[in-house]
Length: 267
Length: 107
Image (cartoon, rainbow over all chains, first blue to last red; front, top):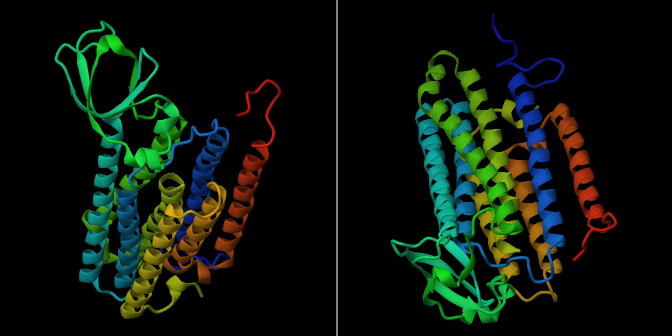
């Protein structure tokens, strides 16, 4: 049985069915991300004064990722336009660019996650805080048994609030050094993973969900670039519509990042 | 007729994309500059300006790259409902920030 209106527009809607479908899906996606942005707002305004982090994320990497996604949105559109003018070679080129840009985006995101997961905050028994990136743990380090030492590249501060605003002049001028701490001096130790505080929780949730969308979109685009492109020979119009629909999803992913970047990195 | 039904010229799309990309670069730079500037006493004004710039960015992507400036009525209807519920969601969120149940520790 042939699926109706995959190529030609339905007379009543004026659009082919897949396009209606993707827009309905994107509408539901707006509400999904909207709910998480809503959670972000509530967490931020509910934070104790001075306890909402600023400057925790690398703006340079965030900017590079913004540019990569903007470029990939453009190559996606050009891939569709190349299909429309029946230039299959150019379609292949533009979509290959999209895949490479998306993989670079994910690579940078992975680096950022890794950077957070090796960044530790240690509350010491004397009430001060050691904060920095993990250099090494001694072979016998065991927090539960209170044995061994851990070395961080960072600093020790009196108050946890000093770690919140890394754009503050004091934080900018702080000297970072290697700090070795004995397990017996540690009251609590944790990395900057999702469980660290509400900021890292919502950061990992929002960007993790977004990265999953990037991954999913990349797989679909790769399929159309590779094995799925066989349809070009048999039904180029339907194939072009598929590229348009996947492109709409990709642009939506770019749209989400347009708001994620300023909300998480710049404010 | 929506944009995807019209005849396409690859060259005109390349020109359009170049313009959109340049504007996105400019708006992104403006957001970063605002973020590191000393406008206002706290973050409120800066957040408002940065989000306003982000909306301009989003308009460019949705309007030109997603062809929303020339879509069919059905798509606008779907998005109209989405905008209505999204505004409702954000409105309820902002409303909730001013009202806490009794016993809640409000910082």
